[in-house]
Length: 255
Image (cartoon, rainbow, N blue to C red; front, side, top):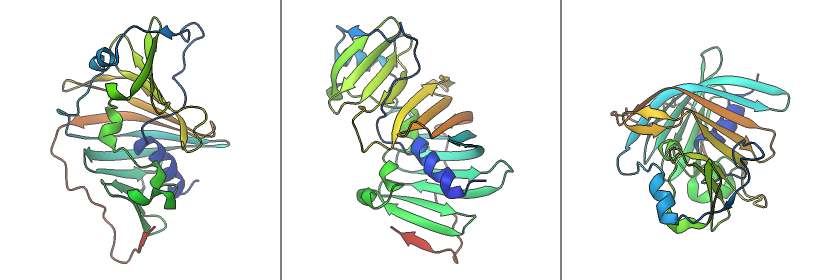
């Protein structure tokens, strides 16, 4: 069985993902035939649900399938997030809590309950840790990925989708049917990207907010993958205090 640190690393790719990946979602050959679109960046962005002013918190639980070559594990997650901080509890398949992950605007903290250690990584020193380099968006911002018209350089379309290219070579695929973000991707030649692809599926309404029920992230090696399947999601409810419960005798390592 893999360690809690293994789960943390791959779950962080999902939960604390930076703004982009490298490839689009799985489409058939003829769906992938895109041509330049006449739609303006402003018109496209107006189609995409943006709840940055209305959605203040989320909480819920789900299951995550974490896989790499020769290994696949299922874990349960419980999560809470405002726009400033996120807290995640991880349990193994036997229901035993393995640890907690906390993110605020300045740092990322991981409590490994199994090995009884805690690590804190300042986000402005993310080069000191592979975990810190993955932390740039909190859960709430991940569930409602926002698109800015000022970031878009080119737009293409086919019968079903728009594809927007950003000035930093990210590729955003958007459904024509409902304006939801289907995938976000980095350019193939981005060596700094810790992942290759993120895909959003299973959108449904939660108190008038149209949010994904399944998020899949593939690692930059195209071999590691984590899929979150949301079982329960509540929006704009009062959150508990978001803080780690670390025993006094557990050391906190500052990286």
